Length: 196
Image 1 (cartoon, rainbow, N blue to C red):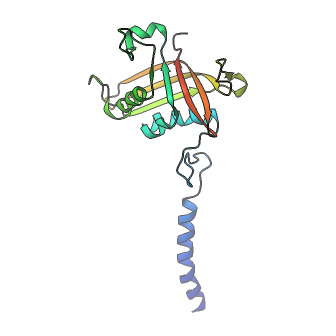
Image 2 (image 1 turned 60 degrees about the vertical axis):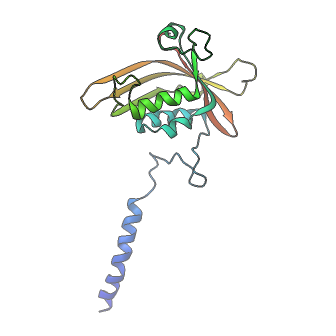
Image 3 (image 1 turned 120 degrees about the horizontal axis):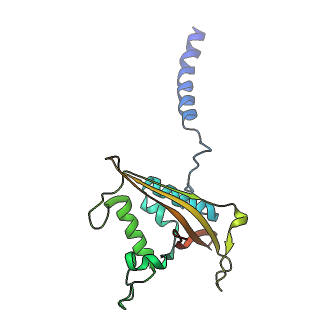
């Protein structure tokens, strides 16, 4: 009788232990959020770029926005300005860059809505791979006032996959200018250097 009683008390403990062990922390997939204040941890420049990759895989607009500084700029190659440049200041000429709001709108279309002209739906899967070089290959921003910024040139591969088995891909070089703000890093400039 005593043994049976102990067995019945042991079964609930084993069940609880099984649940706890099955939800253990996975060191290969750490949380990107600090559970205390729900902010995304960008304590290094490479952490920001890793979060950028993750935002593409998850098609997560909020995560993407968390990587960008409020004064963010996407800069085009001069050869691309006539094709995809936008006239921001209404002077009749396409500009070689766009800012935070336009970049977020483009990514909302990429992640959720599809192309603005309706020719492409949003992809079923997005894969962005950045080849982040070792820290000794990072650069300093030479511009006055940006002495604490870090410039990281990355080779990138971007693949968009659709349910009908079609895909679009792009690769090249992107140069990321990252700046620290209140102990966090943000992408201030994303310069497309794909044809260099």
